[in-house]
Amino acid sequence: MADEIKNIQPGADSSAEQLIRRFRPPEQAIVREKRRRLSTIIFLVNIVILTALFVFHARRSSFNEYQSHAFTYRDVIFRFSQMKDRDSGDYLFTLTLKPMPGKSVGIPFNAGVAELAFYHGDDLLFKKSLGAGVRLLSLAQGETKAFRETIPKEEFDRIAAERPEWLAPAQRFLFELKRSHIPFRMELVICDDRRMSLLMQFIHEVNR
Image 1 (cartoon, rainbow, N blue to C red):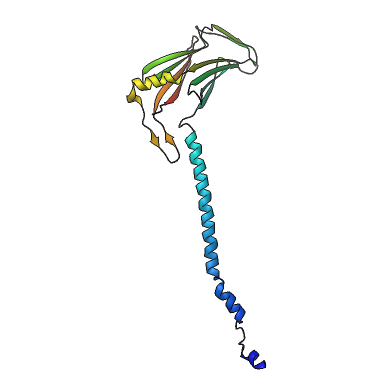
Image 2: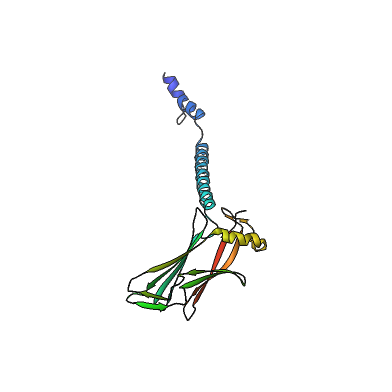
């Protein structure tokens, strides 16, 4: 027994340790396996994020479905907004008037509060009235009045069918399809003696 003990070299591994080392992967292999698992997890997380972004952008319109512009004129805060109905595709235009704080106002109009005109280039396509028939609008302090007009999408579809050369082609970006559309110029004109106006861009998408 003593001879066997003497035969064991200092620092030498026992048979059990040698057996464990034989079946246990080396430290470098363990590190590589951990890195591989981490890379796989990061890859899967990126796939989930990219899929979510794709679904989010695919369900959105290429252009803003709601726009709002505000300006102050004759001691009144005017807010003009445009909204597209998700179900019908029709457009709702709203003009809201509210006097500035501490003010009460009365504004004379010429047979309507405002006109909304649509152009393509220099071609006037049609006009709509907001607050038709209003000749005098009185607003007390803090009072708000709104005038609305709905324009069916078929009115713009008809223009697209009659003037196909105006269509901008569809384009695909990284996560978004920019549909075929017609760019219009939209002008809001306040129907008083000064005829103050506001120019805006209006985009109508065409399903093709």
